[in-house]
Length: 148
Image 1 (spheres, helix red, strand yellow):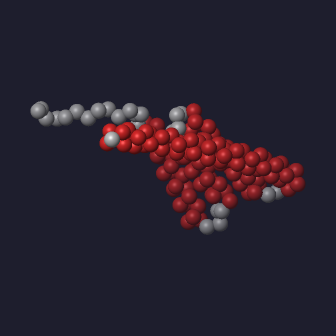
Image 2 (cartoon, rainbow, N blue to C red):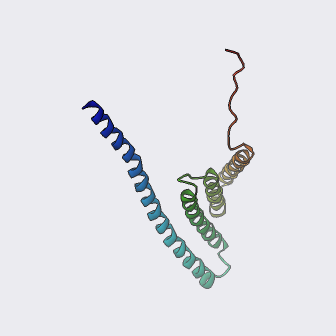
Image 3 (tube, rainbow, N blue to C red):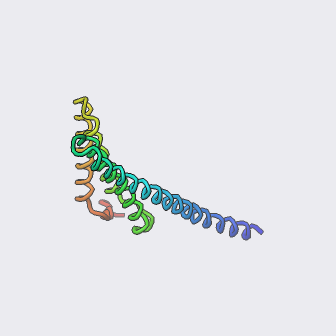
């Protein structure tokens, strides 16, 4: 009886991660569809700015371009998640962070201290990206320095 309960419990424990993974995949697909819709909507806003406003409001034009790239990067990150066996590459989060900070600098550059802080954040993200690229993907195994 006890072995049967342990077997049923292990079956339930093996099903739970699969169900959660399926739920996560469904939610990410739904998010990708919403982001795709917003990306298309951003394209229409982009063309409206081009046609109606012209080149006089360059801040709004650049801000909309960067919002477009943020949507694009998030959709790309979701695609990479499925291509790389349910793993989000860290570099895409860094891309999104850098793009978001650049957008903040372009849109809200009224306060010099805030702009300096945003620039420092971009520098930190770029340094983190550089460190990530020079670090080997697989860590070497530690060797013991003493004999048994």
